[in-house]
Structure formats: structure tokens, C-alpha cells
Length: 361
View 1: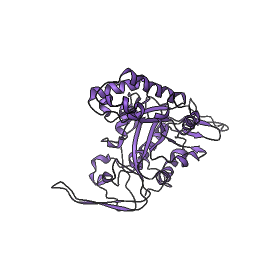
View 2: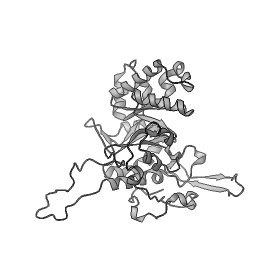
View 3: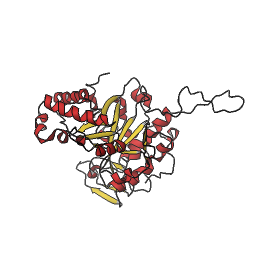
């Protein structure tokens, strides 16, 4: 496992070649005491200069040819990774189906945080550190430089050349420095063990003040350039018990209705979350949902969705819907346009290029 006590890799120490052209790294079998660090050559200026931030949620972002980088390049403000942590080391033995291929044995180690959709397709090189945390930390370091007067004279009174509030951190969007990035972790394994393995990896971000957080003692939310949200198997008790919460939980959007009179329940989730999400089926119910698979939304369906969005907004939460159709494109785009116009904040998309049809530059 990568030590959480060593500093993240400096840009100057990274190889010049982009990792995607080095098959040896992709084929890393995990049979070593350390995991190689995937190099990258991207900068936030190269990725999204003259690209404006858009309310897109890059669903299963690791499916992209270039995880994280593809999402940032189109201005998506939200990315999602499926994460796995195992309590014992194990090997995966696979027989190749290609005539020119080779059989492989892959080793996965306890405590490491791996990223992937299904366990059978995990690869030892695809760790959360490699695909997301290391590049994000480098980007945030670049976007938040230090400032020092060259010709400082007399007593050092702490003056800075920075014309602005030094406590406000910039995000990873070149044209929208104030726009935070939502980074999601979909827990596929045991919630508590996965949380315990994940939390130390975010300590460098905490130390630099890059994470939004909620202070339970002050009952106050503090914004930051990176907003972390856990979905899937939720470690609710662990997060609830923390005085300073750097991880937020995915709130159950289907519970935010005018019919729900349990304001205490909704208020509790407003302090545990920044986003509430739910499947389209859970929001519309079994009676209203079926027609959405082949038709545009009816007025009744739109009214139901708007009620839910508005209720979540009353409690300070953003909203996201998942589980909608993925094809045909014209119907999918119609649904996404309706979500946006009705007030949904993060549009769940699988194809970033097709999603750009909704928000042309």
C-alpha cells in the first residue's frame, strides 16, 4: 500500500511520458511491496482553459479513456469513482481469450483502495491514489501558489502580494476558480473498513485546507475547492460521530417530499450531506416510472420531480438523479434538459461528449 505518511509525488519527479503509452505500467500485476505512481502531463490550463464549468456528473468516471482528465476537460463539476478495499491479500488468476495474449495472475493487497466497476475487472495499478488523488492534489497545489514580496523591507508584518483572501482556496477549473469539484466515492465493500482505509489518504488535502467540511460544534458548513461525498455502502455512524466532517454522505433524495413531515430526519441529512440523490424509479414510484423508459416526461412527472428538487433545496442540498435511460440519445437528452430546467443540480451522464450537446461552448 502507498504510505500515507510520505508526500505526494512532486511534478518534477514524474516521468515525461504519459502513462497511457506505457503498457508495462497498465499490466502491473501487483506482486510487489509498492505500487508504481502513474505519471501524467496534464495541467488545468491545458484541460479546461476557455471551458466553462457545467452541471455534469461524470458517472462511473473511471470508465473514461482518461479518468478524471476527460471530465475536467469538458468542465464537468462532479466525478464518481467506485472504490474497493479488501481485508486480506488475494490473487486473481485469469486465462487470456486472445490468441496472442498471456495468462495473468494479479495480486490485490489489504488496505489499498482500488477503483473499478466489478471486482473481476479491477487492476492493481488502478488505485484511487493513481487515478484521482495524486493528480487532484497536484492541480490544487498549482492553483494555490504562495506569494512573497521580493523587495520586502523593514519588519515582516505578514503582508502578501496576493490581492484577495488568502484563506479562500482555488479549485481545479481554470476559468471558474470558485467552482468546487464534487468527488464521489461509491463504496462497494464494507463501509467502515473502506472508510478507515480511505480517510488517511485525504490527510494531505486536509492539511492544505482543500476540503469542504462541516463543524458540528459550531453547526457550520465551511466551503472548499473539493467536496467529498460517499455513496453506496454508507459508514453513517462513523461520519455522524465526527466533530469535523470532511466526508459527506449521499442523502436519500426520495425522502425529500412535501408529504414527509419528519423535519428532524430531513434536518439531520442537511448536516450530513451536500447532495441528495436517488434513482428515477424511487422518485416517481412504480406507477409513474414505466413510461419514462420510452417517452418524454409528462406534466405530472415533472411536477413530482420539481417538488422533490425544491424540497431538497429548502434544506441546502444539491440534487442528482441516477437510473434513467441511457439510450436513445434524443430521449435521454430530453430527460436531462427537463432535469436541468426543473432544478436538478448535477446531471448524471455516461457519455461526456454526447452531454456536451446540452451545453455547447
